[in-house]
Structure formats: C-alpha cells, structure tokens
Length: 439
Image 1 (cartoon, rainbow, N blue to C red):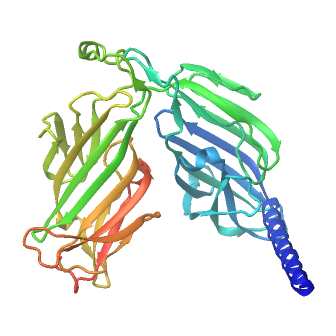
Image 2 (cartoon, rainbow, N blue to C red; image 1 turned 90 degrees about the vertical axis):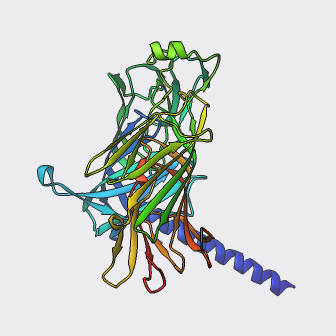
C-alpha cells in the first residue's frame, strides 16, 4: 500500500516537472521575440470587419526563432473567419510579399479562451535579426446593432468591441490602432489616451512598452447602414454532364442580420426616398459568375423572378438580382440561382494523366457572410474515389445520387465549411482517375 502511494506521488511529481518544463520552454520561446512596432488598421465600412496588422518583430533571444504567434481574445474566437500572413521583403518600391503558412496552435500557459495561430517564417530569425509581417484577419457577426430594433426611417447604429492594445504573447515596444468608420457619425467611443478622432478615422496610440497580454477594452458606437447580408445556408450543386456541360444550381437562405425592423413598412416612402426611408435595407444583390455563362435563371418558391439583369464579357459575368421585396432587419428571402457553363473551361488533364475539375469555392454574392456553405460536386456515373484540393480546412464526405437512367448512381463529393467570407472565393480542384470515370 505504501509502495503504491509512493509510486502515485512520484508520478504526480514527474507530471508536474514535465508541465513546468513545457511552460518554461513556451515562456522562453515567447521571451525571445519582441515586437518593435505594431500598426493595426480596423475597417468597419461594412458588416464584415477586416483587420490589417503590420508587425516588425525582432529576435532578442539566443536561439533562432522559426515562428511568430498571433493571439486572439475569447470574444473573437467564434467570429474569426480567416487569418492570412505574408512577409515583406525589400524596401519601398522594391518591396515584395511572400505568402506564409498560418496554422492554429495551442499554448499550455495560455490565458483562458485565448486562441493562437502560428506564422511560419521563411527563414529562422537569429539574434538581433528583424522581419516585417503583414497579417489580415477577418471577423464576422462582430457588429452588434444597438438599438436592436429600428423603424423604417431610422439609421442603423452598431457597437464594435475590441481593445486599444493589441493582444500579444510578446512585449510590444510601440503600437498604434486605427479604426476606419463608414461615416463621420460616431455616437461615442472609449478614450484610452492618446486618442484622436478626425473625419472617418479613430486613432488609439501610439502606446509604448506594453508587456505581454496587455488588454484595454474599448467600445465604439457608430452608424453603419451597409447591407448586413447573411446567407444562413447555401447549397451549391456542381453537376458534370456527359454532354460537355457544367450545370450549377445554388439554393440560398438569405437574411438581413442588422437591427430588426419595427413598425409598418411603407413602400411609397421607400420608393420616394429610399436613402432616408430604409437606409440600412437592401434590394439589390450582385452575383459574380464565370464568363461564357448561359441558361441563367432566378426563381423562388412562387416561380420565376423577372427582376434580374445579366451582364457578360470575355472576362466575367455579373448577375444583378432583386428579391421580391426590399430586405429590412430580420427579414428573410429564399431563392435559387441556376446557370450552365462549358465543361471545357473547367475540366483539365494533369501531367500524370488524371483529370481534374477546377472551380471556384465560396459564395458568388458580393459582400455576404455564409454561415454554412455546402458544395456538392456530382461526378459522372462510374467515378470512384475522388479527392478534393482546397487551400483551407473543410469537411469532406461522399454521397451517391441517382438521376435519370443511372444504374449504380453518381458519386457526389461534398465539401462543407462554416463562416465563409468573400476572401474564401478561390479555386479548388476535384481530381479523379480517368480509368475510373467517364468524363
């Protein structure tokens, strides 16, 4: 019994020693980097918050540093849609940028709820060496309408919450934050001196010599009448035909996610003075489609909607659509957009003899957030074991679909992703062995 107790005690001591070692190792890693200068620019001109962060970092430790950590507070972790980074090489006119890998990571001594991303440097930084990093991260659903309900004649006001100081695991020598507002109408903002507001820009800082994990909460109450267009669910079906055609069918569940509309709606007032009687509403949506699009339709549960305009040229196609009624806060619309494309523009053969479909990820509608995006690529009958190459994490699985005259059914590759923003619009590939497929 005594021996068992001693062994348990030894095990606990060993675990504590290992934990302490890891904590010291991480702390040591954080202490070897300092941020010489940080400049953050927050763009609030739409309902999608874009943050541009420029960091000049220096290695002050004795060992080379191969990564830089980004930290995000708990209030932003669920709203974080995208994080990208690049390294600035050269100076002024000769400056160029190189993409850097960014991956989520964890720290054992992290404050509760803090989320980290690791930026992999091109070359490890030795003692005294510096590097300049350009970071873009995007936040969704981060503007809170207040008041939560407005009438048709009222403008929309929102709260934006953040910190005047950049949350970082490193010591920051100097930092400044700029907040760009949609208009000059700012009801109130938290002051953390030095603070300056001029025109459409709110400036916090510069602040000097701030220790790791410094945080100074601020709230900005401002006017934002941009369309808060959110697609709650989007299903895009991409069907490869045997007859040289690519058929696209998109099912939208759209909502105005701004301040809820209260009172009655007057169409007369809206049509006579739309900029004053419904400033935060929207009635037009623009979809960017590929060139050479054909057989375009736009309909809902009632039937075809004729209020659409298609513009095409050799580079792109644009479809401007109008829902049956303007959308105010809390109002929803459900509709379908369909179109055909020449298969030869999207189907290619790789050097190893495989064939792959190259198509665009994301939502074609401009300035929209998609809460849940599902893309179903329907392959010709007989296709087996397809694989997808997507430049960011997505969930994948296979289904089977039966269509006219099918015997064994068609393989369907399903891609799913939540919290999708316009920056996710990028090509992805579906690869299939030609010996096992008929396309």
